[in-house]
Length: 208
Image 1 (cartoon, rainbow, N blue to C red):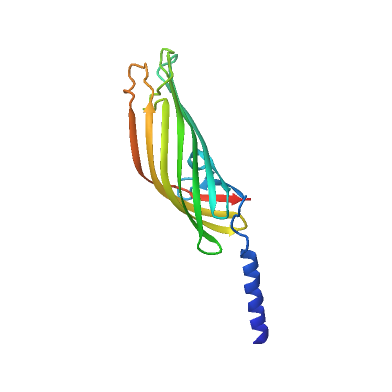
Image 2: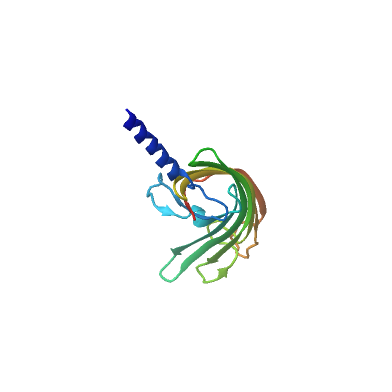
């Protein structure tokens, strides 16, 4: 009985030591990717076609930076010699701050605010070879997009610095489109959208 109690006490002590320092501390930096396990093909990919970085100013406060880039191109052959080609890309940059609360040795809740902008670029080659720089033929425009919002999330630490988590929040976006000279393009305009978002991915990150 005495040996069992000693063994149990030793096990508890070892687990306690392993749990110490498992969460990030002041001066640590983190990087995140995303895994979408419920998609048709469960693959690792970057969250929103970008990468997210964290830097912990204190044990509980962090700055966040997200850099994103997305590019796509479509081609449509109208005859043996004519080809319609269009493309669309966007480059994103957002900054934010987070406040973390450790609710256990391995679980941290956080909340914060963020703001950023995107540069939107679109082009279209028609069958005659004319190029239009401000729109493609899929409804995308060149222009700018500005965003801001608040968010909350959870991090579950699996090992020293290694964590997974999820995030949701409220986001507002204002998009300003550039006018196109393409005859069949829709009219460019400025509009604002707002709504809740929930990342369609499990966040995987490492703080070091």
